[in-house]
Amino acid sequence: MDQFEFKRFTFDHESQALAFKEKIWSDLSSYQAVSFQTEATHLASKKLCVFDMDSTLINQEVIDEIARLFGLYEQVAKITEEAMQGGREFTHSLRDRCKLFTGMPEARLQEILPKLSLSRGARELLAYLQSRGMKTAIVSGGFEFVLKHFQSQLKIDQIHAHTLELDAARNFLGTVKDPIIDSHQKRALTSKMKQEYGVVFEQTIVVGDGANDIEMMKEAGIAVSFCGKEKLRAAANTLILERNLSLLEKFL
Image 1 (cartoon, rainbow, N blue to C red):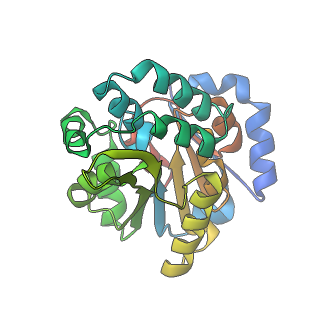
Image 2 (cartoon, rainbow, N blue to C red):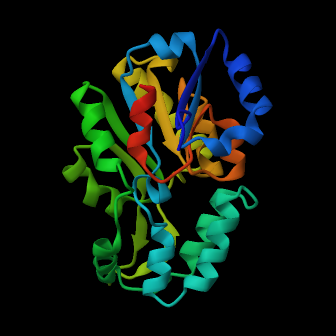
Image 3 (cartoon, one colour):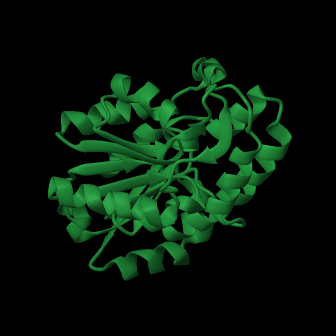
């Protein structure tokens, strides 16, 4: 890589930042990471960082791993990819996938935990954020049992995700408890945490990889696409273009 591995551009207004990003879009392949920030965001002391989980903090899509465990991978993975690209409404896609797990035993979920791996740089980035006194959270359209598994080891302040519903024998009913954490609920949860911690737009970072993360990025001065899908890259003001979360430190 040359001297342009990392680049931060600063502007007076968000609209200017996004317009310039669109103008140089074809040249972004020369960067590992690039950020288009307002001067106010650049100068603000960051207080809160909210992450997506699947394919962001971890390398896997958990629902696909559950499907693999139960021999349903091909059916579920196709729906997952459509949802990630924004081509299928998230709530319907989640319900359709969970319905396939009806009758499967909850006890087997523990088998997938050793197969889940943190994204490169995740542990280092979180340690860096926490050393600066920032609150950290995960808001996920995935499943709470995975977030709980990583929460204590990563010292995450808050987690929000789905819980699979069970029958009396602790087999899956094929449904999740409400509310569904779709794109609008992700934004609502992020907004609520900002109020709880007394944090404003310029002090907030959101990191995700899929179309379901676009809404919550409207709450953040630094909206990060982590190797994201096309719709998310177009909406984000900060792009990490290789799978190394610690690259975000360059822009904080």
